[in-house]
Image 1 (cartoon, each protein chain N blue to C red):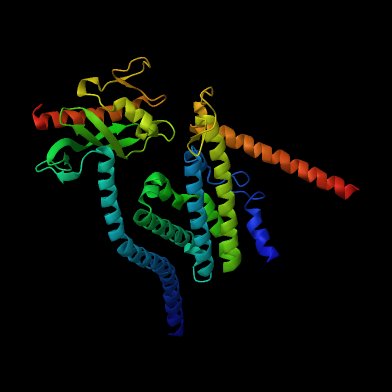
Image 2: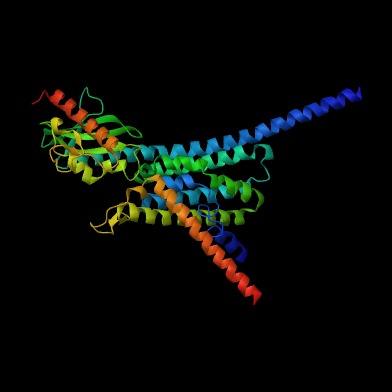
Amino acid sequence: MSETHDTHAAHVEKEYSILQIAMNLTIACLVSGIILATTYFITHPIAVEKAKMLEEQAMKDLVAEADTFNAVDGQEGWFSAEKGGSIIAYIVPSESKGYGGTIKIMVAVSTDGKVIDYNILSMNETPGLGDSAAKDFFRDRIKGKASDDLIVVKDPSNKENVQALTGATITSRAVTDGVRAAVDEVTEFTGGK
Amino acid sequence: MRNLWNIYKKGLIDENPIFVLALSLCPALAVTTSVVNAFTMGLSVMFVITANNVSVSLIRNLVNPKVRVPVYITSIATIVTFVELVLEAFAPLLYKELGIYLALVVVFAIILARAEVFASKNKVIPSFFDGLGMGSGFTLAMVIIGVIRELLGSGTILGHTVLGAWYNPALIMILPPGAFLLIGYMIGGLKIYEAKKAKKLREVDAQ
């Protein structure tokens, strides 16, 4: 009788020990969850607000002359940049596939179908090579060009087209293609007016 | 006090995470293309490693040895996510700049190594200084690599052009192979320095 009881007790203790180990990890995860949930609860509203502010600032940087920005009806993510009540440009989101994944771009296109400027929202291009696509010197190669001229070339003397970044031809092509797609969309939208 | 200073100091050179322990070489290759990135990464790691050492030291007697590694990883992941959330809310530009590398801090070998080797066996205050020292050593190494790579690879320091137009940037320094070469030379250099130091000590002893 007592023997059965002993084995039973040992069995219970072994179970208990495994349970204790599991509980140990569970409690660790629970504490972690509570900390993160609290942090998220506090920081999320601020993060959303900051992101919105940044977006507005980014649009101002793209089209400096514009005074108001309005969402365009029926075109998701589009904004019209207006100056004194008349539309001078459209700000259009665009995507293309780069060397390290999707590159998300925001392109400002004037109503006559030329690139005013663009802004890279997210990318995973090679640091020091591909990520130069966000820098001023490469933006200058794209600014002011119409859809037909947005072709990547490797000839430094060619000023008509877009000269590729050294060591990052794929990135250069991806960004240029993304910008061109946005320009074409705008041209289509405005009906070439 | 002196003891704490020694705990701190060993992370700087004698047990420098990158040059001597050769841990966490991946970020040393990936984000040291410019000084700013290297420095911000160094500071983030310093914060995470110190906070994690403190938290691991606090719970060292509560954690069952069988699940200690998952618990430590949970602790590291919590701290890193906390840093991410706070940066996203209060410094969105910096958050964007660090990108995916911030999340990768979770799996940095050096952080888990310090938790396992030091914090799980020591009291809170020494663990704090150990984390701080290792973090400083890591930051120091990252900045040194960053300065050299940015200078040779782009001819700039902190984005300012230092080497004039005559300088043709050595692209390889920006790419991972350049970082490997550089880290190799630096580890070699440190070994020579240590050998000389040991020789000097022996000579002094002999006299």
